[in-house]
Image (tube, rainbow, N blue to C red; front, side, top):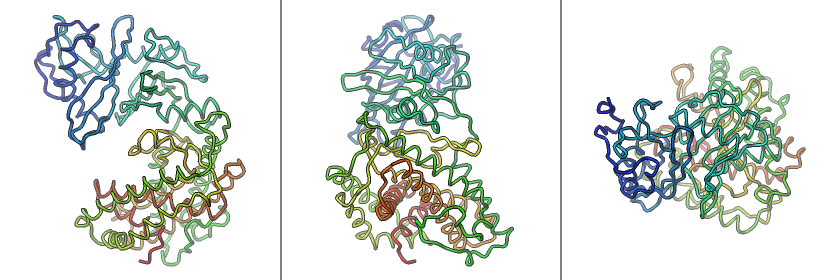
Length: 543
């Protein structure tokens, strides 16, 4: 019974339209009701909708295209969501109209009556017929509409559709697994530009034959007067045992368990300076006895794959989007403007949230505020004329969650870049050490997250656990940077000499930790101690 089918926003009575479905988006009445009364209710509840912190003003359909299967007509709709705070975002939503018998889902947008025919508007991705249609069009590269382009990658061997299903829970994008071997990521938030994930994935696969990221298999894009927008990216589905973040949490938990079982005195553990390079056989036996050899072997492998990624991203001399470049005044102005704005923003957030902090977090926050001039000075001290290394396209949002564990090896993925950055900023060539700094911050987080999540499990007070964590962190960094530098330099990646490497690492870690501070203060103030500890350590403030 259609009357009983209520969507998640409580629509019960169908919206009635005089037009039939095939011409719906040419009908001003349908477009008006759909973009206001229907979509405004539906979109705000979706996980992929990124405007939840802002006030929605209105939604406009800026463009659309039609694709048809033997049975059905579908529309790809490009939405512009306008906010009262005077900015907008673009989203992609494929939609279909289905009778109750044809529905493959309970997730409906709204019940409707189109020219007397009763049915439902649904997100077309929930219909298997549409998912098969996308697969077939990528394989054949055929479409009647010149606006939409389906591209078949050089490495795509599959030609027959067998099955499709959603991958995990819906996040900022929607991923579909095909035939158990391929994954098609549909970008929900879209930009008037090619997506960096598409650009880098295709480049690494088809130009560099890079084996440590999922191979590019195909894509969907739409050509508009403003530019080429990426709507979908198809890659191989790589075998894995989960992401490196979960792996690292389990490893660090095991290491902290060893404190108790091996009766280790934290004060007796040999400490080192941050960024001290260490070959694995140079790690003191007390540390190996505590943490085990295997974790350092994994660090060695991850550092190797990271350097190989950067060698691949920085070794093309033909494609200007990927040719390495030197530092110059324009880059420096861009960098300083960006960082001083971000730093001021974080200062304001911190001052407004001091009342939420106590203990060590409050102490470190006050230290941060007392030393703000010194921190700002470090950001402004970037002198491009002293830089001898090169800038390349980088991952841009590199952390343990962007790495899959595959046996003893790793796959690197998700090259979209930093979510807070504009699409233009994500494509700026940067020091590859910025990715390394991102991974180091992720190591730091995994250590503190383990302490916070298991505080009653280890028979040590928090101060001692933090002390042990900082020592462990420095050895992780030491082994990683030694391996990374060796592999990068052997591959002719110009990352500079030791003094420049240390300066860039310090600079980029500080930038990352300041960036994180805003996120933690806004969402979980108790964790603000993590970036604040990172800032204190990198600035070498005395406790």
